[in-house]
Image 1 (cartoon, protein in one colour):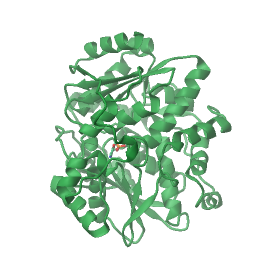
Image 2 (image 1 turned 180 degrees about the vertical axis):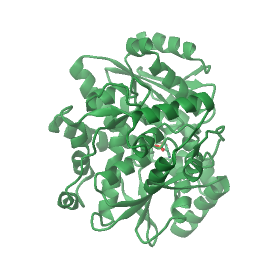
Image 3 (image 1 turned 30 degrees about the vertical axis):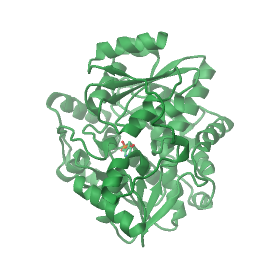
Length: 462
Ligand SMILES: *Cc1c(COP(=O)(O)O)cnc(C)c1O
């Protein structure tokens, strides 16, 4: 399987190279040249099979020759052994035809564990084989950072550096990043918002000398291997609800567009997914882009669903690439416009293609709190604020097909918002019970690329 850049001007890579590289050298994102399709009989036969078995079947064709069958099976087994539920991604029911896909039973209680745990195992295999070291770097609006740290802490061939926006992540999120004691973990609090953190990470990747000197590797949601891991739970959820014999709709709380893009890959593989609904909080650039055709970032407004407080949605570039009939030059032009004037207009043809693939909606702060209250009252379930954004928007898109809303984090990651809406303070699962007793370890950094780079050089040589 070959991977091409969304901007059309970087070398084609195989799976392993695309995973290790992250961002393409032309600034684009890697996507598979073709999407392999399921044989329908084979898809039907996967219904009711263990998560790991479905994962192997979904992931193997995209990996090609990069890892052997046994290597991949071992990585998948180690990655998902830490998900504390026998189904890994179980469904709960919210209403007659509305289901919740619980993606929060992993070590950091958010869906990002599904991708990060696997990518940790694959990096380990790959770097050891090559006798190389890497510096994993990521910007986080909260959950990516802890998921990366959990996945990479203590591994021999990597350092993991995480930039998070100072003061804009919840106490649980911050402590999950700052309390791990492993020496290869470096948590940096940047004076700025998530978009600033993400921009500095991108700048570091575009500084090729630095990139090569420290063996920079990204595990942000731009990394294709992460998107790929997320395809699996769309398949298991759809199969549990009757696919391939009937069509299933999904609503996805979205910021960086990674998770919902994975859903579109599952659909292209032949899983009968009808609507894929983008659910945004009031940082609603994706919803506005689909409504108006104008991709126009505004300032980021802090919300009670901070992991979606994003105005530059990186993975949306992959959807644009498809919508522009995989014309890398056209996508490069749009990104150039975004840099020059802060936004761009989506062509009429591409907009129609996007609207065919995705519906959208938004929830403001009051909607989100109200949804947490009502879901607790009506179904007895506590939702985290991100999942509540999804449930609210899904409610506006219910149809004849079963609707699955992705529950992206455990309510105990956001106890204040949940308690304010329900009067119940969700408890952390036992394995995180000592989180507030452990000492924190992190470094504050200015929003300045040079300062961040020297700190990283210092740390990884120590
Ligand atoms: C990261 C995250 C999201 C957004 O996911 P994207 O892939 O960026 O769209 C939603 N909810 C939670 C809890 C998250 O951690």
